[in-house]
Length: 506
Image 1 (cartoon, rainbow, N blue to C red):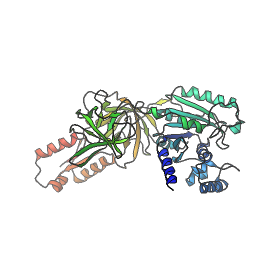
Image 2: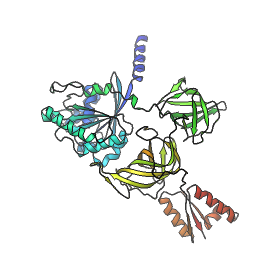
Image 3: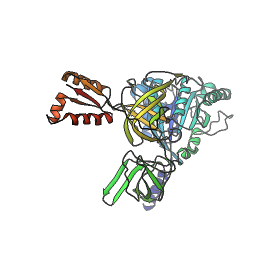
Image 4: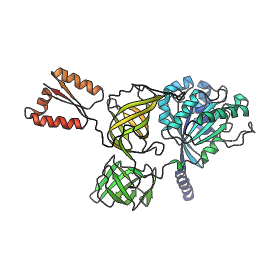
């Protein structure tokens, strides 16, 4: 019994130490994304007996693979997906082999679900782009490749699927690969690999197929087990965005966060932004004990030799390697809200562990994701992508997204619905960047009646503005008759400086 328990513990320890690969799958309708993932699970013996029995039963009842098992049913779980034979929502599946652990995001191929694909791609290390051998490189293939490039995924597997329907022709495979290479040359994707396969039949998925003797490469699973992605992380620029100040008692004060990038070393001098105060790292504390150094994506608490002012949203960096500091950001933006962009609205921006208010100052262009053409527009609608200039209420500490995905990305939140309105990938400082800080000041709206004050207040709230009523009735209700004109004017000035609108009058 002791030996058996020891074997189980060794297995669990070994499994814990396995590398994790996050994979995105993308492709057009019926290219076979869900089928490929289902085949990976099936051929790698990662399905339980009851799952297999259910799969065989569902394949006969609602499958789309004829007499064969419909492996796509392992992922297409929504009723609408099964009825239409398509993927609508992002489906995540976990499995592991003896060499690696995998999390696969099966994303929808339809253009109307672009935001779903962006969600699945936001954490991916590698993308599998499927191409139907009968159709070749089509518009959706180009759109998905552009999105993969935009989101900074450096490793791409081009899986030419359904080769069985083209009699496993090498000429067909070579022609598709050449077309894809010509398009991908315009984009920033450093590592692309090509595989001919049949997901339904299992050719070149887990094992090399004898039906394509002309193919001398590896199977997809063999490649996925060995592809090197750990060096994709930024280990050069130390960024520690403070998430929480840990103060359990008077003898301990530490700063807790996930290491965004770089390597934190005990004894190194660090600077706190925005204060500019410096100190040295005294301890790097974890649940399992102290460390001499920490690196992404470890979550640690660090203590400093000196008491410095730092709290949530601040960032600890090395003094000789600081990020960009600005209120003006140039960014690629993906609009994810069903409501069109309102440029008068002040959004909440969440960047690293920092939050503040922000607005879209201007739209440079929108990209047609199908043709890559750039068009001048006045607003963004659902799934639109383009370059914008954003101004924030206080400076952010950021790097370009291409250099550092953790400190180069952000989300915009609708202040009324609290929905995620957009996701952004920072290019750098805005062309409108100025040396001095720009404050988003509030405005005074003068009214003459209580009804007019109430209407203006509601109107501003609907636009997402932060607003305070200081009309006569509101003042009497809150302060009585004790509020002097001088104090009122100082209060208005303070509110405006904080970017808060004031409804004032009569």
